[in-house]
Length: 95
Image 1 (cartoon, rainbow, N blue to C red):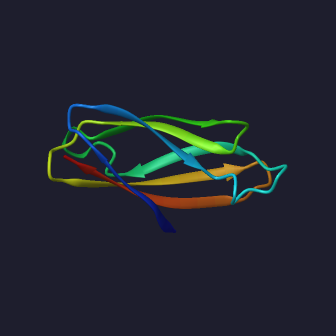
Image 2 (image 1 turned 180 degrees about the horizontal axis):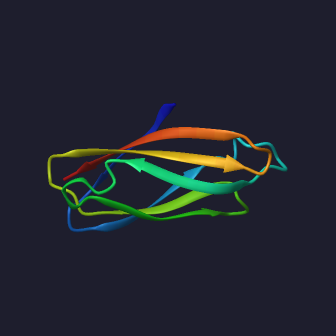
């Protein structure tokens, strides 16, 4: 598992994020399932709306809440139509 991003957001915002897996996936491969685990509800921080999009090559999600000055981690796990599983770690810094 590797960290694929470190994003900043304001505590009052609900912000959309996109994670692109096109370079990792085979040309005929698509994301069929997405899950999230981690600090997703700590201190009012919430990640929701996880979907596979853009032909199954991207994951789109929303982040909201949190406490200014805190960092929150989340793990995205994707499963593909070729039975591959990939886990990635993302840090959100609330300002």
